[in-house]
Image (tube, rainbow, N blue to C red; front, side):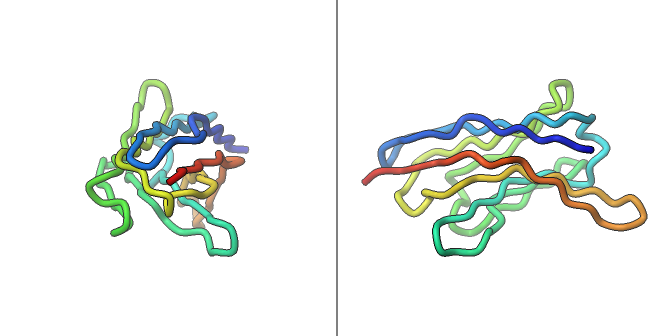
Length: 118
């Protein structure tokens, strides 16, 4: 069973920065893509950013130019650098691993809270 462990959430003022990290229990090369999703109270979970095994990235329009996703294949880690944070970025952030083995599988971390105060 794949395990994903997030860290790095917290409370920050608007305009500040946070760096989220997600450590996988397996070699991240085995995943077709890894990403970060978020869910604010009363809202659906949404994609924030993802990175494929080939290194291609994709971002939600709301975070383009402010957030950067990266991967460290040696440490089996995916990071999300978040700059110029806004109150509307407040949410629980979840790490995701997307894998195709005959069928598509999704694995999720437990989530880490990010709160941005105005």
